[in-house]
Length: 552
Image (cartoon, rainbow, N blue to C red; front, side, top):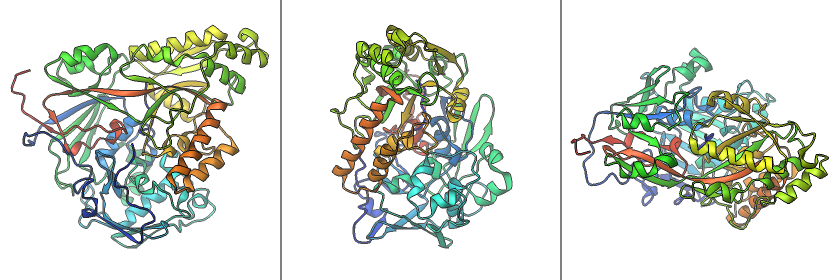
């Protein structure tokens, strides 16, 4: 199952309504050590410098932060660029380009002080003007593609009018001096600091972007991060260590991100066996073999993710809500996950376990083939007669995902719904979903932050770029707006559960399962710390490579 965005409660989240909160690196004691997302447990061995870490993933379309839409873009972007703040391995907010910040008592004003002496990869200094430019750029009315971060900035004063071209300035963000950036909100937002850690809001150098233009910058990015891009070929990306990184030079000399070939269905396992990559996602077929491999450590961790069958609600025949509901009630999710019970849990809703607002008592439309057939009859299509096939775009290559697709096809056909499966590349699939011309698609969505908005607002608010379903509902929009404004966690969770319940009833998607990620890591690799936000949240500057003593 291919993933779109990366999408656990945040301990030590700075209290929004405290009386003038001064957030310092020292104030985060008990959460993390200073700097960007540091590795906490690398064992007793002393970290060693040198070597090249080798990864494998799908090829990105761009490395320009506000244009990223997939985890395959986010992973390299997060190594090349920094944000004002970051999330550590425990998903705590920690300083990054900003070393301190002050939040007003009413939670409406954030004042960030930038670290002095931070340099972009081209040797030019970071200033608050670059930060101001980066935020404005996400909201730019001329921006050809909206990042997920765009919707979260709606809370910034004047942001939506600026984005709509109704005003030339952005009053909610200013830079009073070269090392200070101020952001003013229309209302408090409990997760705003986490928003500023998103990859779509990483800081870019204004002069370079304006000189190169968006397209060229996306292929030749310049950031402040621990690695800089030195090569982009059909084979992959080469990232080189930034020795002048403000958080300290990375341990490895570089990172090679190799691209998956169209004919590869093993997620990189064969290349791992040949010694060409150091880390790969383990398929269900490889789990026992990986566990027995003396060269390998197998890591298992719960991701904040949901895999689903999505529908473009304006496309025939799924423009009829009864057809979508019939599809939802035709699929046996419990039988689906029995194919891979150790890594998948049947989804009862959209929000995954561990996400604030999640409730095991919330139920998606139940498995009920008889009711599904009745719904099709009520829609004027008994037994599916007269219904055109549902065109499903599919880009997954793994054998397990293909089994899932065939099980879904079988369940749908049992009630009279036919699928017309179009096999496409990952790039083609993202273009179809971005262009809103995929009648049906199977994707995984991974949270960007530990907030229900990472799923419900991002995917289902009417005007959001990630609303691949063209789902529009005034009541859901109102509930999501109420949830964004609510500061009481208990009340807020109730609001999101109500919104989620209504979305499930209208069936723009069928939640299938939540995933336990399984990753094989060569034993020479240390400091590799995946989080529930998936691979895109990795901070590779803390990874180091031991000398292979030949024991494996």
